[in-house]
Length: 144
Image (cartoon, rainbow, N blue to C red; front, side, top):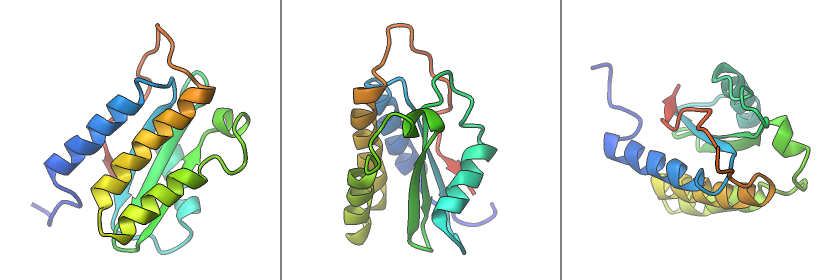
């Protein structure tokens, strides 16, 4: 083993369950990426991860990445161009607030899971789930 995992298997399962539940409300694709440190701007790092994960490979360009750097106490939420072209400028503010509130209490997994659920609810307004919806992105948590 190369050190302690960033989060436990149980915590990973909770996040995956939140993603699966959220994606029942939207055709949007939600992913979570967790790493320990982010030395720079978390938005810049999230964009890099978004591209590395090829999250732009969705039919409606409606992928969302929730990026968390645990030890650096940083996070970012970014959406693909299909989302950004249809939602208001402050669309992610309530999701960011949800994460920040829980993180401030030390509730990291609850914060991530709540942000995932809220993202699914909000995306459902602009990208409702269709009967023929397919899962275009992995629901597994990725790690840096």
